[in-house]
Length: 429
Ligand SMILES: Cc1cc2nc3c(=O)[nH]c(=O)nc-3n(C[C@H](O)[C@H](O)[C@H](O)COP(=O)(O)OP(=O)(O)OC[C@H]3O[C@@H](n4cnc5c(N)ncnc54)[C@H](O)[C@@H]3O)c2cc1C
Image (cartoon, rainbow, N blue to C red; front, side, top):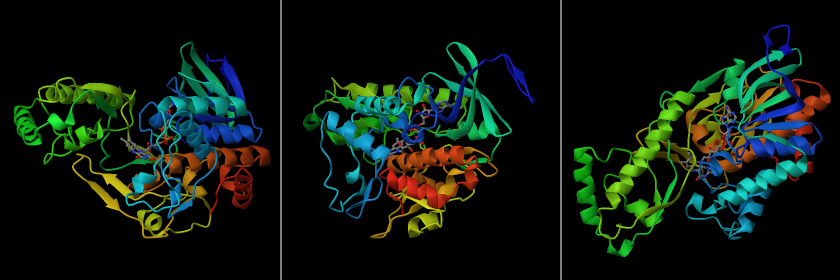
């Protein structure tokens, strides 16, 4: 029985930890590993049975960008994990010393299994306790601790933690705790990553394909968002071997996400059923697809500092800048028809301030990953995986300092944080 001044709940306190990390994606794993490596007792809870989040379960397994203008700008736990995972199978890396024509050419391809396994190993070796198939249901703050009630296969239990790091992508814990969050007036579309094989591209008549596609679209058997371009339907998909549909996202709730998961598979089924009728595609099949629909945008925290697109694009060095970020503004409009892009000028490398990871009014709760405090445009750039990994490691180190110094996360000494991160082989601005 959990009893407190504020509530009584029939839930045993199963873990008393220094740091609780909720969400084992590309931000959460470095956060937990960093905190644990520094010697604080760390628990990581994850709703799925695999670490890596969107990069593994979501099959967006090409993290970027660790390099800018021919130089490495993000290092540390995330980068080490990606390089280790990459070496497990292909070992092929872009030539980072060259500035590529397209920014995405510097992304690092990793096998999903290899990355999930590498994160397991790094967590276990650093002493992180992992609870898979577990989600938080509510959170209360009492004095200098948070009690987070969680549900797993066996029921509800409580975790008592000095610091909580929300790396759920959706800012679920920050929202539950009642700190401010915001959601855009519209949301970027979601994509269920799906890879195809078994067709002969040389036998495909793309004019016929377009005619047939438009006819099916008129009939309603194919829908807007099932394919990338109405001008050249399924052309890029067949050339790259990847079906890339765009689905509307309502919000971060389990209810709308449930509708989205089913809708994304229905969209893929419509595309495959259509493509099978095209000469050259009779034997088309799915080689692999994401275990869940990839989400680009939901909630962002209202943080102590909001990263604006203007400051991001100009490469402003914030007074509390703790890591770099590098990606163009990359805002997919909600119907998926085009992407609003703003490219960074040569030698510009944006920075991320520590205060963008702190929800306003938070005592000892931090975030990292795509829900960091930023406007929509800036978020469309700093949500990429290398930046999420960097912010995760920063949050893990800051959580350690808050525990060590017995202070709130806003009172962590940023100079000490940067020194500590540097000692861990992390690049700080
Ligand atoms: C289609 C698509 C294409 C993209 N392309 C690129 C690209 O080319 N390059 C790039 O670098 N990035 C790309 N991104 C962006 C990038 O993949 C994500 O923004 C990034 O992975 C987010 O990392 P995260 O750790 O914040 O969240 P996630 O990776 O989503 O991790 C969150 C983790 O928390 C868990 N979780 C969520 N809620 C709860 C809960 N309530 N309780 C417990 N656990 C929970 C999840 O299961 C997950 O493991 C793309 C994204 C999408 C969707």
